[in-house]
Image (cartoon, rainbow, N blue to C red):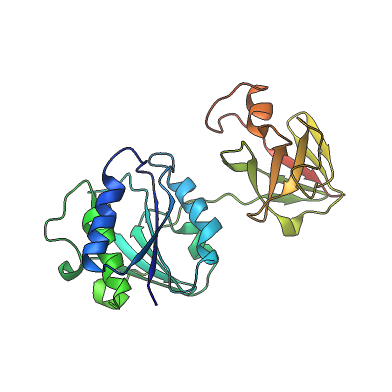
Length: 265
């Protein structure tokens, strides 16, 4: 069976970086099956990369190799690592980009990629995606064990992930991600939410949880359990981000975004 390797980066699609990584992998293993997830992670945004990995990795067959390169510390003392987590292989910088996948599994094996047999002969200080992560992924696809890559890493780096606050009759969460449709994704998991809950976002009130994006009237703010299993605030045929953050004006980022509160009692 052909081994699958996915690519998630902040490289964009204008430059040569993604192509160079693919060329390295195909030179080592011409039968590798490369799947592009996204190369549009905001530059240096480790959290967005980690959250993106969380939302797709388990939908691939076990044994898939997931390469994630969001690496503002490239060339520093941060380690290049390979992990086996829940039947999948992850390769990338040890900077927290694997936080969510590690949090969701009790079985984690991590190794530093340091064996010169499995990287390119001349490793640059600025492009470890090409020189370290791509060749390591290709060699693993051919059967190289993680133990052969280098020394064991006992505690991979984790980034801080805020949990919702649970009080008497109230859950207080934060928006952690906005997707390309302007949906605001919170850190509140579905298991904490009742269908008839009342949701407060700033001064706006939403009564109950909708089943689909089309449940509300056009332009209406709704609350929904999204495909990530988390509470989302959305707008039917609109952008919740613009409604909440800028009153309809387009902008980027999540600065000054209000918290989201759910009344459960």
